[in-house]
Length: 226
Image 1: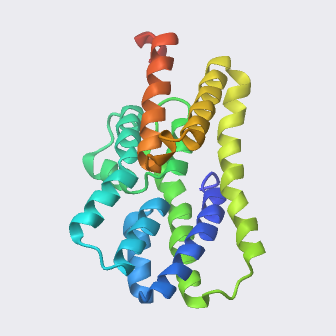
Image 2: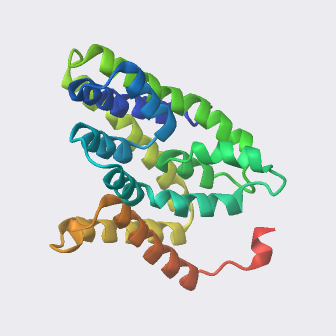
């Protein structure tokens, strides 16, 4: 739960903006809250909201969400290998609902096998922050000043730094992976053709390239995971 607090603060700020946009788009409070509870994805929700407002077809909605959220397939696959083997299917389904970029990050950094109760604790703090932010946003509209929203948003980036920096300082292999990931992500943002790729696919491509390179360059023997 402690690890989920900075995620909660960052989620509140982002979902606050989402709630405001829902109000502008004509959605009810109930509709906005249900979207946040069942999705937990900023890119997917903002993209989906634009399609709802534009009265797009169900096929467009399905295809857009597939592209924006397909990275969670990689995260789920990776996390399923780390979670304790005796974890039941029902527990795994609960954990899978709470997989976001941030919760995945703090989960993968836990030493040894991951207990589903760690995920429950992080989710129990982070998810309410996302949902309550949506509620406050659609209820208050544009009352809150932009400076306050920006200040709250910084918390989630601080959390990412807290996740990345300590292990990178201790392990040069992790540091190289982080640097390579940053370089490739930068190239995908500035190069003419690559910057046209959707954010979801960018993450997947960078992840596959960096992970494949790291697996080849720094293979881990089976006994090292015992």
